Amino acid sequence: MAQRSARETALAALRLWRKEKRFADSIISGLLANADLTPSDRAFALELFYGVLRNLTLLDFWIACLRASRIETNVRDILRLGLYQVFLLKTPEHAAVHETVAIASQKRRSIINAVLRAATRQRSVLLAQADAQPLFVRTSHPQLLVERWQQRFGEYTEELCKWNNRPAPIYGRINRIKTDPETFLQLYPDSRPLAGNPDFVEFNTLPKAALDSGHCYIQDPSTAIACQLLDPKPGERILDACAAPGGKTAYLAQLLQNQGVIIACDRDRDRLQILKDNVDRQGATIVRAVRHDWTRNHPSEEILSIAPFDRVLLDAPCTNTGVMRRRIDVRWRLRPEDFSRMSNEQLIISRAVLRLLKPGGILVYSTCSLEREENEQVVSRLLAELPALALETEKDSLPFRDGFDGAFAAKLSAAVAL
Image (cartoon, rainbow, N blue to C red):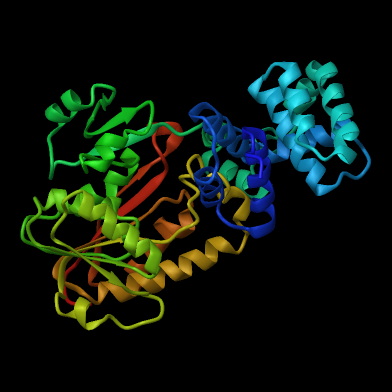
């Protein structure tokens, strides 16, 4: 079988994403793992696939401008790839048109060629028409989300939508269990320290050697908020209730100076194995990984043998609206009912883990959501239900304000056993 080109790989990924409803990163990583592509072609395939997903509504708007009649779904995928190159990547016309037409079946090439040629001729008109469209079309976000954010963030909504459409920088957390920032910067001179974030650096490309050695872990600085609010002390017993893939778990082990015990739970067997691999690589020897579903089961004997816990981190499952720049297709998966569904699940998990907190203990509730239903309102409902629970502080990260992913964390203390 002939090897796929970068464009063919991106097209295959788009079709799998549409048909199988799997997450985008899983689809493209699987295809690239089996593709014989040069590094530049791999990068181009990623750019095409993620770029089309980030701009679906806008690309379909241009398709509708260029062809009024119905277009087959498979043809539409190829047109999306071509128009992304013509308008947003600004690929040279010959490559954008000719090479894209070439990946279509012989029967469909004339239609695709005609539409893409028309797009290059009408470029300025089509760009002007796009600029006149509503924000949800221009930035390819569900109208539901844009309207929600406009009510909360007002004029910053456009900046947030544009943020979500930019490729995410590569940030790494220096793992102080194995090294220190000064040594790390000497070992990896391509890393750049972040002002105000001494544990974090930025890279231009994935630092394979640093990752393999456990000297760092790829992590956005916003993820540190919850761990820093938890403020664990060496020797304490910590529950990381929803821990996979383990970035926060390993950071907690670092803050504990690898002294004490962390019970790290997740309900998915495969994700729990990823957590184990990640914390082992970073030398976090105090972590015990336990498979557990807080929404279904009572705590296992392994969890109860360590309880009550001095501190609990609940990084709750959420809609991920704060990390859309990294989770490219999340916006297309959300439904109106997801916000109430997730908040109810968050409350169920919160109630379960609070029972394992010792009197005077600390719970940090966190999400990577921007939505009040999943953040402030969950905290308010817990406080209303449990008078012995007190809110000490809340902290958030907003992309358009702070320059990092969206995140929320609340620090709660329990006067008595709950």
